[in-house]
Amino acid sequence: MKTKNNRPCSIKNCTYTNTKFRLITKFAYEKCYEKQMLQIFPYLEVGKQLCHPHYCNIVEVDRGQRRRNKKEKNTQKRKPLESIELISNNTNTELDPAKFKNIIESACPQLNGFFNYLVNTIIPKERSAYNKNEAKKSIVGLCYLIAGLRNKFVNQHKLEVGLYLMASGATWEAIDTISSLGYSACAKTIEEYRKKIQKEHIINIENYFIKNVKIDNYHSIHENRRPNTVSTLTAKHFVTCVAKPIINCSSLPLMFNKMSIHNPANVEASRICWYLIHQYIGVFDRSYSECKTQWISEHLSSINQFDRIELLTIHNYNDNIKERKIERSMKDLQLLGFNEQNLHSMQDYLNALKIIISINNKTQHLNGQIAPVVADWPGQIFIRKALYTQLPLEFQPFYLQIKLFISIMGPLHLSLNSREQVVLVHHSFFEKLFHFVFGQNKKLAKKPRPWRINLLAGLFEKYIETVFQIWTFALRWKRKNYNKAPLIFLSDIFYWKENHSLFYNLLQNQLPSFNDYYVENTHSKIRANTSANATVENIIKQAYVIMNHNPMFKDTYCKTRHYPYNIPIRDGAIFYYDIPMTDRKIWFLATR
Image 1 (cartoon, rainbow, N blue to C red):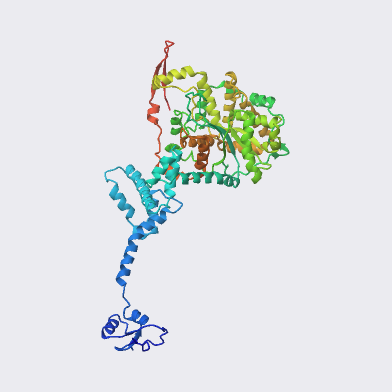
Image 2 (cartoon, rainbow, N blue to C red):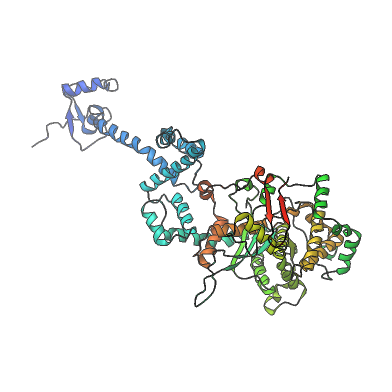
């Protein structure tokens, strides 16, 4: 049948061809009037023709508007979830409740009041302010959980949970089970992330300028001493190399005024005797009480209330103690190497130094410069042997680079070893006192390690006097290495004072920077984040994760600790102790 409406379109300059035409009926004309289309096209009349595209745009302009309105309404309902999803997908996970609230509200204004609504709905009003703040942290985690359930690829928060689970010794099956609940990433994802950190660590270290190096041995304290048919214990031994910069201090040359940093005569007994006779002769004529009185009179005593509390703790390096949070910061500390190895001989220390030398071969940042090494007392002996004896053939190519290292005696090891020796020599007395205070069922360690020395940090001359005093009792008690290392250190100090004033002045001004606390705290962190069943490979991977990954998740959700003692209890504590083997009775009074 021939098409009835085939006349030209009434719209002027119409360009549509090969299309259908529709008649403008009276009803269609009324639609145009209601929609005010006649103001645009006043020449339209009933009975004229319009091509199909113009008919839809003029007469049926609002057709399908209800469907479009419904679609836009559904889109608006989805925006809050999409906003949370975008926030969760950000690599920088924010766990602070106040900052998290600001982020989601600034990203999507429709979420204004959303976080407060969750807080008011979930947290009872009668809770304390502290418990409310802790519950808000849980709500932040809940928001990330909701976003993760909506999009399984939103896994930054899940990764943090998985890393914490793996560090705690959870098995792959356990982590995958938690992953199925939506709380964590799968075990394979976590393992790949740990491998990635370990591979990238060397590249990051090569870009880091080393100014101060510390070497120490580390062993896993998760030790099984129950004998079996193969071995009697399962302790794992590692060597730890860390570096921390000394702020506002440039590198120092190995040669100064044509004099090397190393004493050509090795240890000079005559030099030590001269300083002992002419400058430090009165050190041995005063008791500790007399020295303490003198320090107080000279306003040199720097012991504050937290130092007095810490004197009661044993070898405690925890970084989550609230009173020491800032001081124990590991900011700018770099882990140079963490390998399975003992530190019992000169060759062991040379292998440890090769970790640093391998980095220097690529960066060349130590060439001709001094690299101070803060090591324990055996480290003083073995590093000195490496400098002044003929090296094994395998280490001879590294001799010039080994000369860049200088062993330094740090205040912390000076304290730990000195106090340990006192306890060891008088162990029977301290054991009886320990049982009286804590009960007969409690056991005093064979080698108790007090945490902190009561040296006046930064007072260089007092530090030298202390080294002299420690050498005397190490000599009296015939302690191997401990009666040699102080003399080596004193010989170096007096040589630097006369021949290498640059380094001597650096020690005087920056003595607290040459501290072995940081390597001990690194050990503490690794112990706290590894399980008793961790293998050598897992411990090494976890060490690199700890030193390279932001610990924000643990800092947010880990409970902070306080000292179990306080100043009033300490100052008012009186112990009455009866020694069974004698008729004497001893009173112990804690005073300020």
